[in-house]
Length: 232
Image 1 (tube, one colour):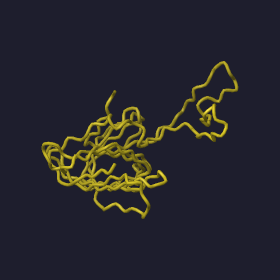
Image 2 (cartoon, helix red, strand yellow):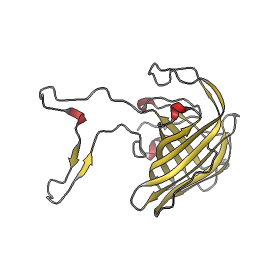
Image 3 (cartoon, helix red, strand yellow):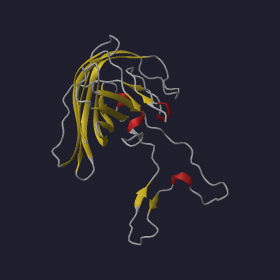
Image 4 (tube, one colour):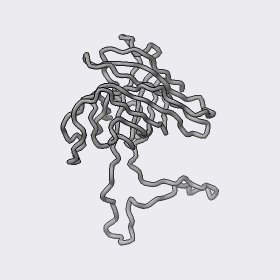
């Protein structure tokens, strides 16, 4: 199985080759009051990589009894952006250095497996307006020791994804009435007449379930302080 490596560089690629980055958060996330299922993840920590500048992440996410996810994440810190087309779209993005890049995310999905959790959401605010509306994945592991533990630290990784437009639809060339993948459908149990079915539709949106939890590699940090907590 291929693994997804999120690095500390603030570069972005498409879904097929997502350029992933390490990040940081400043303002404490705010959560609305809700009844929860017991699953949650939260943390507050600062870190640096290879002697680089210090960054900070704060986040909190909970799964409600109705299965929905509520949560936020805040990220801030110095970042340098290369002058290159990392997405392969021919579109020039921002290049240069931002002394205090900030990104605020609203979570809408979470998957928890033992001490690991992956959270998905959408950027609702950022120093760079181009990031607003992009999808986000934050993956964490609670090893019960804190970020600063050298032997077995709490770990994390993070990525940003631009929406991917589908410009082609596979169809059956021998059937003129085939609308292809553009169709929506309902999956049902053919042996049960009382099965109302589950509606499905095509989607390229990045969610907490897009990649298996075992497929992520965590960020290598040189220094850090703080803690990550995962409640399964």
